[in-house]
Length: 363
Image (tube, rainbow, N blue to C red; front, side, top):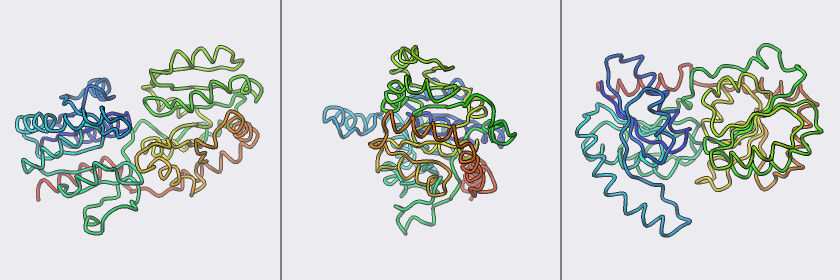
């Protein structure tokens, strides 16, 4: 058995791919796997770190805000498809899995040209543009949420699997072992693997106000671009804090967190479900098809998270919500219980994916 996993860009796509590769390795110890991504994405560092082979193609997202960048991205498409054709012909995969991101489209399209069995992963509550184009070539598409924009003609291809998250992320001991009432209130802030400037700016400006809300500790993942600036802002803090550009051991952070403030990418949503940590979710307003808003609604509709739109987020509003939760621990416990009640498939997503692919290849 030989598989290619293609995609990347954000850590959400890459970590889902790593989880699938881990399950493939467990199920097919003598199998061979390859990840295909770009040098611009998180896969450049995360895939080798996880111990998997990777090949790079030149591909970019279709950024419609800048005409020169869009033109360059379009120009790259035929070259990335040709390069992908050579990769697929040389590796000879039994199946190809597109997990989303810049490299997914060209590699999956090349695989379709060569007649390879194709499987797709859609992590968000709204199917993305690339997967809407590629689904016609796919045998199955694994979805994290029930989709609202799926064509009736494609419904038979859909497998509701949830989103693969690292198996190391377990229910937080702060909630499962009754440690929530400890003296210090632990807050974990992150905007995804690349950070979120709006959240970073809001927190940086809020440091003087945060000094007065009680004994807190903040763990803040800023992304590389904002690291030094946000570290400087925290120098006014009278509370404990740790600032990173990227956290590799995120499972340990979840385990000791009372409340998360984050964007609402699919990986974050399912990590929160797995860890059962309550959150204030601030969707990225410019996300394609506003998918982060609908991801966050999935939890907020179940009262398992609080949704705060970026237009409503200010230093004052965010600090007030933090103050509320510090003073109302029972509200957090209720939110954690609602996360625990969310029904997921009995098998882990990566198991469903690998088993389905294996059956599809053997048909």
